[in-house]
Image (cartoon, rainbow, N blue to C red; front, side, top):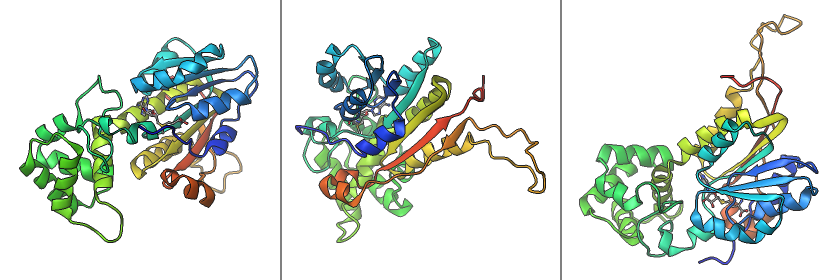
Length: 310
Ligand SMILES: C[S@@+](CC[C@H](N)C(=O)[O-])C[C@H]1O[C@@H](n2cnc3c(N)ncnc32)[C@H](O)[C@@H]1O
């Protein structure tokens, strides 16, 4: 297992969260706590960090922080945890999502996320919940699998079709090597463009963990949870996640549709969020941590407008 996870866009994320002395900050993706620890350093004795993770191993990595009374850890899927906070009437000054997997998860062959090392075809962030990648792949209809590969892995449709048919032909699959071999037989080996198994594994993982559904529901919760002026910060690692965050914010920007000749707005445009700049890792960060290469940080500020369904 990896000894550590290097937090991506650490300084940029902490600065985008605009942490105040006595802020309440939710780190919805605790992982190894790289971002949470830095946020705690930034705030005063009256601040609070709520760390959330659905991976049971993350709770163990949070243990040393529990002696800091400003820190709480909540185990569970972030969409459920954030909606529970909303239902209890709690508020937050900032919410951070650092999406995807930690190096602890990727580098542990026993979790089944890696196409480089052999392991059981599991891929669940919480191995006690939902169905494993093997159960999914051994049951799924070809058409559904093609849809998963196209939608969640941006796999070209022809390639997705070949891989899906090969997977079905080789069933039952039980190890990551078997899935990797199926991809290799279906797509062959490319000199350029990287290992095609990367996108296939990503797509299956996103599907098995309902990652996009979970992010969508969690973003909806932040609309209710954040105080006016509160900050939403999301670091994404693939286009599906990034599109989702971008669309969520742009749908709530309440762009004025008044004719340009009108001196004041009369259409009642009322933004719920105002978007910030999109940040990418520096060349130095990518060189030091190649896993940061696809990262994008999007941020938005909650306005005082009531939420859409308030
Ligand atoms: C990229 S890592 C976060 C790393 C962390 N920021 C750090 O610096 O150590 C993503 C973490 O989010 C967790 N995660 C992903 N989706 C989740 C969800 N829907 N609910 C709760 N945790 C989730 C994963 O289990 C993983 O530990």
